[in-house]
Image (tube, rainbow, N blue to C red; front, side):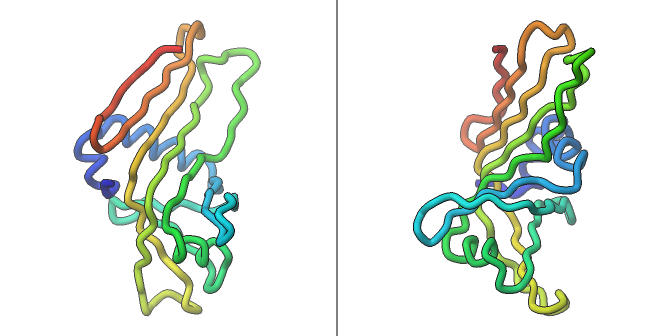
Length: 150
């Protein structure tokens, strides 16, 4: 696992593209694990503040309860359709997996929850400008950044 500032230090260009992609839309999709072990998806907002990744949750929300019980998560950027006319102009698709660490902030209103995310994996998928193949980039703390054509 690595904090976002560590990912940024190791792979600044890649981290900047992933961050930009997540910030193209306000909402992203969060996957957590229910008490039963089943997955749960929820809309959420990801905040890149203080050079870290943060999630906020309303006090007592089901996603906060999920993360307190099992802090593993996955995040998927907001979906933007591939343009019909120029597929190479597509802004791509970003996903990350990580572990939530609750941060207690007495200044947060209503006892809301704030979680700092340690990253375990990132994927970024785009269409090559030539529009003849996909470019899949994956980052892992132990393996670093890898690029593949598909």
